[in-house]
Amino acid sequence: MKKLTLDFTPEELGVLTALASDQLFRKQFIDPKMPGFVPNHEELDLCKSVVGRLRTAVDSTKAAVVPPVVPKRRAAGR
Image 1 (cartoon, rainbow, N blue to C red):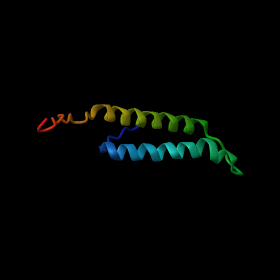
Image 2 (image 1 turned 45 degrees about the horizontal axis):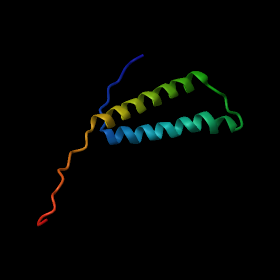
Image 3 (image 1 turned 60 degrees about the vertical axis):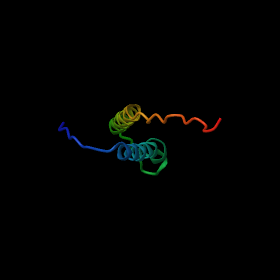
Image 4 (image 1 turned 90 degrees about the vertical axis):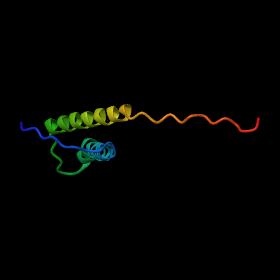
């Protein structure tokens, strides 16, 4: 299998993960109720794997971003 490398910002990766997760939900729970649906378990397993990897990547970018520390201000004149 050929591998590709793409660069995404954390925001783009988060949006892409949300879209992929929504499509996985549709493929897993809604599509099987449609007439004529033919299940493809290998594709569904691949989708679950990819969404899991995307979520891991999003979680790791969230953990890497450290919010700045705002110094506390003292009350003047007291």
